[in-house]
Image 1 (cartoon, rainbow, N blue to C red):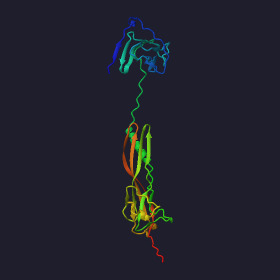
Image 2 (cartoon, helix red, strand yellow; image 1 turned 180 degrees about the horizontal axis):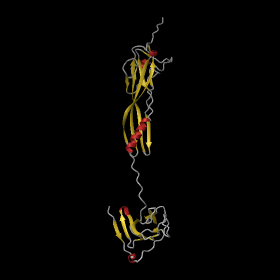
Image 3 (cartoon, rainbow, N blue to C red; image 1 turned 180 degrees about the vertical axis):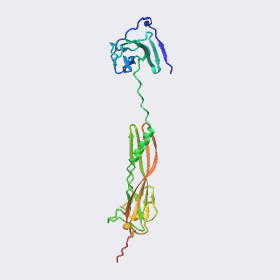
Image 4 (tube, rainbow, N blue to C red; image 1 turned 90 degrees about the vertical axis):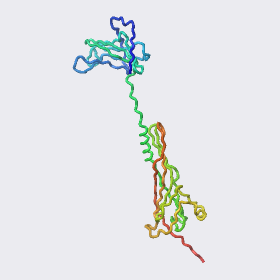
Length: 304
């Protein structure tokens, strides 16, 4: 980038000698000025001055002071005693970002001398900017975390005969066996990382029942209709599509019962918010449970 150089002429132009610069206490913003060590062995550089940036950011004014290293101290390593002076021409450069740089000359008692440019309004090297987080990758990780923490319950499958007054749990041939699930509430899991969050919700979508007698699987998109045990069976017959009619008893089956399997399918959605947002669907999930159901016949009793 282009650099603007400004040459400020002052009365110092006619000065025969360089004028002295007053000493300045070193602060955290000050930096040591070094030069190659002309007298080996190491160190390869010796400190010859301390430079403290000024507060003038107007592009003008006076150059900031430099504190010389005197009395043969050399600032560690036994370096020379040096003096620093601003350029008698007050040479100044305005660099990108409004930085104001001044030219200085130094002269040391070991015969070395030189010049350099020092910034009058710099606060030191700029701090490295934190890289922008990979929000999309973080979102994907949070989605996996939230999905993995979903704790989906089983179908809690109910049927017409599981609350028989005599305590027997059984089915009856040639009669409707109603099925339904008592799992109806959605399940939600959430994961967060700083301002970014992802929430996953699973909602019961459909119930399937395998009656265990070799008959077809019963599909119940609405989860089935709960049977009202406070009403007569004949008053409710035909009130649900989630039913199965056993054509034979379970006599002769292992345990004298049919193994019934209930499968509850879950619809899964996700939503995200924070630095980035998003929403969508995930593959469906399912939970299952099994139990043994004895199926018998009702016997008619004729009394005279």
